[in-house]
Length: 273
Ligand SMILES: N[C@@H](CCC(=O)N[C@@H](CS)C(=O)NCC(=O)O)C(=O)O
Image: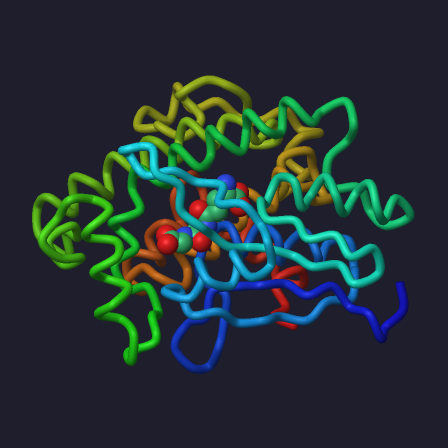
C-alpha cells in the first residue's frame, strides 16, 4: 500500500464540524488508528447509507425486528486489494490479515472470545443508549433521522423514546452505573471479580488490587490497547459525543474513574483523518 492508495473509510456524518459519533464507526476508526494504516474518511448522511452500500455492492448486515435487512456503516474500501468490507468485526479481521506487520488487533487465539465480548459490550451499552440523547445530527436532516429511529422502534417520535430528565432518567443512570460496575470486573488490574471493588460502600469490604496490578492499565490487558479496547472505547466515545456534558462527567468518574482513564488513554487513537 502506498500513500496514494489510502483505505476509504465510510463513516456517518455529524453536524459540522464533521466528527465520528456512532459507536460502530468509532470501533473501526480506533482500529485503523491503532494499526497506523493510512486512510481517508468519506462522510455519509445517515439516510444515504442504504444507497451507498447498494452502490458498493455490500450486502446489508443488520435486520429489523420483523427480519427485513437494513444497511449500516462502517464500510471500508481498500484500493490496494479492491476489498470492500462492511462489518466492524470483519474489518478488524481483514486489517490483521492484510497488514500483519502492523500492531495486531485480535490475537488469532482470541477471535471467538473477542466476538463474544463485542456482542456482550454492544448489549450492555445498547440497553442504555437512550441516555445518549444529544447525538450531534446535522440539523438539516435531524428530523429525517429521528423519524427513521422512531419508525424502527415503533415510537411516535425520537423524543418519545428519550428520557431527558427527572426521576426516570436518574433510575437509568443508577442502573447504567451498576451495569458498568459489572463490566469493570473484566479489567483485571482494577481488582478482580468481586462486587466489593466497585460497590465499596463499606470501606472494610473494599477489595484492594494486588500491588503489582495497581500500576497496570488502563486497558483490558494492561498498557497496550487491542481491538477489545477499541470496542469499549467506541461506546465511550459515543457517550462523550452524545450525552449531556454533566451526565458524561458522571460516567467518567464511575468505578474510580476507570472510564475516564480508558477514553483518555485512547486519546492518541481518536484522531479523525
Ligand atoms: N454489525 C454491524 C453494525 C453496524 C451498525 O449498527 N452501525 C450503525 C451505526 S453504530 C448504523 O450504521 N446505523 C444506521 C441506521 O441505524 O440506520 C457492524 O459491526 O458493522
